[in-house]
Length: 59
Image 1 (cartoon, rainbow, N blue to C red):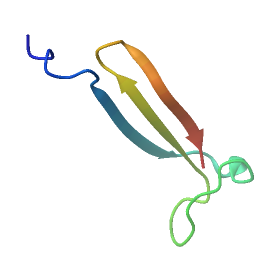
Image 2 (cartoon, rainbow, N blue to C red):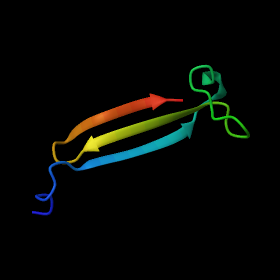
Image 3 (cartoon, one colour):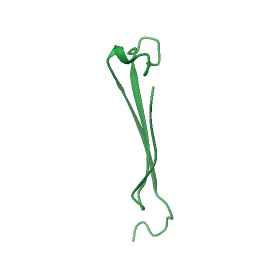
């Protein structure tokens, strides 16, 4: 089988998106000319077990 050579298969990804400016005290943007408020989500998933290993939501 294609996955028999690996004990674990971890997939990590992240995304960021803008939110309304009213949330800037909780989710500040990165500054400069970018949006004043943004959220970043980071996720790590273990493919063979089907478990989420890490989930983080932050500015």
